[in-house]
Length: 255
Ligand SMILES: NC(=O)c1ccc[n+]([C@@H]2O[C@H](COP(=O)([O-])OP(=O)(O)OC[C@H]3O[C@@H](n4cnc5c(N)ncnc54)[C@H](OP(=O)(O)O)[C@@H]3O)[C@@H](O)[C@H]2O)c1
Image 1 (cartoon, rainbow, N blue to C red):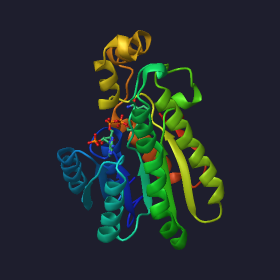
Image 2: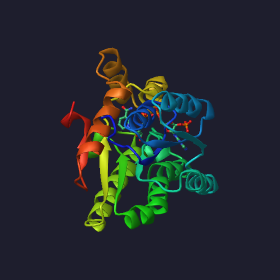
Image 3: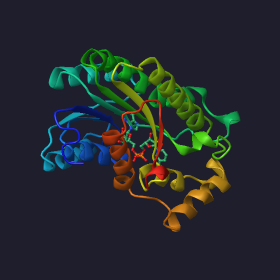
């Protein structure tokens, strides 16, 4: 993958840990400068160190994607420091609220929609005009394979709904951008050993549903989770080699 992203500027959300961190480090290894967005400054600083170890340039941009002002400031900061973004990886996401819809707080549900859908769309709108003007750009929106199986995560109504919306947005945008040199694709990362499934395992089974909880505990215990580096490697391989647009890239297609 050496030089695959040479001279490009990338922005990765959720770059503080997990799949986002591994993606950011891989982009740097391929020659990109990388803007790193998440809330946890310490985690972002660790990712920035790893990016610099690859010889890459890193910009730490702490921001809560659920907050309009912070999102706006983050966008401005990336523009000021890096000028433009060529590769946007909307990876940050939340799996909560994970509980019966009858008792969920609608405000919390709406925040999930903001982080998982509105923020990626807002970032895309911010950087899309520049990509179109330059005749080259890549937008990758990180989703989940559960979108293909909407009854597979009972209690995860917000997660299923937001990721389904993100996929619909992506493939529709891809069609709109045909002929511009800018592609928009979805990435489904598989079952990855990160904080996200760890958070589900740490919940009370009666809150998130005993069957769902047991499934996450068992998949972890049986070693079924892949590493963030493995999953990010699949994303990056597609990003480097696949010029098509409107694709649903799934880790299982390249694993
Ligand atoms: N792990 C899996 O098995 C799996 C499976 C399917 C899909 N996915 C998807 O893959 C993506 C990455 O997940 P992961 O497993 O790597 O999760 P993770 O380890 O929990 O990382 C999530 C990242 O997103 C950031 N983030 C969360 N809320 C944010 C907010 N409000 N504003 C800014 N950044 C925020 C987190 O940083 P802060 O908390 O510091 O903000 C962190 O850097 C997600 O979209 C997830 O839905 C994961």
